[in-house]
Every structure is written in structure tokens, then in C-alpha cells.
Image (cartoon, rainbow, N blue to C red; front, side, top):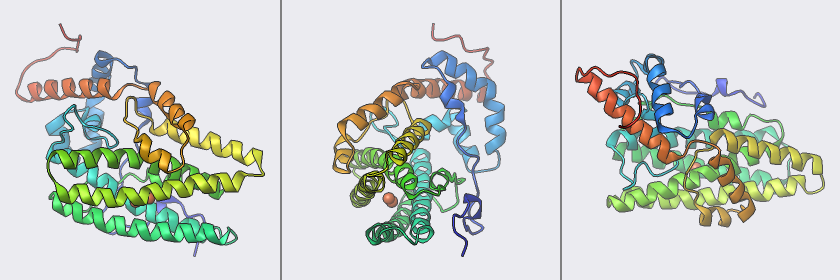
Length: 313
Ligand SMILES: [Fe+2]
Ligand SMILES: [Fe+2]
């Protein structure tokens, strides 16, 4: 069996389709509602061309070119935590494929580093087993909300983050950054489940979150252990962690501080994540822009003629 497998070789059956990876556009957006609306209306035809014929076409028709901000996982979707059925389906599907890749990444890490300490391999084996259970849980949750496996395209960013030949980079990138992010998203989704009185969703998320905290803790402990006598390696790990945080930063996202502290993050690290987030458009700005984009998109669908967006009067 091949070691250090590329994400292109992940095995998927015919239900699955690959998504284009998240574009880097958001990194260049200013924290300005009008500007974001203008940029997205300009590239709307391109966005549509990319998703035409997939289930996301329905999402686009419902939500317009800023749909990704209305369905993005990792935070409250609106002030009251509301999600449309389509938003909930796409978010749960995104988590489902993420769980699958987390299982594959932990399994590969166990296999790729035969000389790693026994306890590390035990932790990765435990994680593989947990993630396999999560895949099953989210498969059932998809069913619970009326969605199907493969209904939305799969982005493989999680597995790609694990494609590193140093195990310390795998646990900083996947366990600490991405599963840390998952803790924030799961906490928010759990609160949503409580709000809408969906006990199945709430309880399932509660169980999964408990495991994720353990996985983040594996990341915290092993990144410390692997780098304890090696300042060079510690520096690389720290840099990679920052880079990964940067690529998934989201302004104004709500960080589940308590969960993350329990998982081995320090207050300083969480402050740093907040500082990184602060450099990007705030969630509130993106949501506002996305709502304007949606309203203008729907107005156009009704046949109204709209010029370039000039901001609210
Ligand atoms: Fe998981
Ligand atoms: Fe996990």
C-alpha cells in the first residue's frame, strides 16, 4: 500500500462529486458591504457556471451569488440562529464529508509513520474509530433532514491539510486548526438544535463534540511532545498552524473558547485566532452583503431591472 497518498487518490463511489476548492477570493475582500455586493454581482455568472447542474444550483436560485456566506459552516447563520432547510442540509453534508476525510487522514497517519511512538499510533487508531462513528452519525443526520449522501459536491480541503510528511504538521493542521474549527461549528449547531427543539440533532452533536475535543487535545499534546527538544520543528509547526488558521479564518466567527481551552488551547492562542479573524470581513458584513445579494437576485428573477449596487439610500 502506498504511503503519503495524495487527495486525488481518495476512494469514492459514484454518488460523490468533487467540488472546486474554496476559492481564495475572501482573502482579498474588504470589510465593506457595498463593495462585497459589487464584487459578487460582477462574478455571479462565473459562480453560477461552476455550480450549474449540481444541487447547489437550487441553493443559488434560492439564495443568490452570495449563497456560500449564508450556508458557510462555523457560526451562527443569522441573529436568531435560523437556517433554511437547504442551509442545514449543505452544512450537514459538508460535515459528513469532513468526517470521512478526518477518518481517512487519521488512518493514513497511523499507517504513514510506522516508527512513531506507540501511544501516538494508539491515539490515531482511536481517532480513526471515532471518525468512522461520526460518519455514520452524520449519514443518519442527513437522512433526518431529508438530504442524501453525494447530494452536494465534496471539497477535500481537510484531507489536503493532512498531506504533510511530518506528523507534527498533521496534528497541528488537522487536529488543532480544523477540528478546533469544528468545535466552534458543532457548538453553534447544537445551540441551533436546542432553539428549534430538535433533540436528535442536539444530542448527536453533543456526543460528536465530546470526541472532537479529545482529537484537538491529541493535537495539542502531540505537537508539544514532537517538538519539545527541537525548536526548529516547533517553529515550523507554529507557522503551519498560523497559515492554516489564516486560510480558514472568518471574521466575527464565534470561537467556542471553553471547549477549546479544554482541548489544550491557551488563552494567548485563542486571542491570536481572534486577531487573525479580525483581519477579514466580519461575518455580519458578509451576511449583510449576502442578504442584499439574495434580495437583488430574487428581484431580477422577478424581472426587475437593477443597475450596479450603490449602497443603501
Ligand atoms: Fe469527527
Ligand atoms: Fe475528529
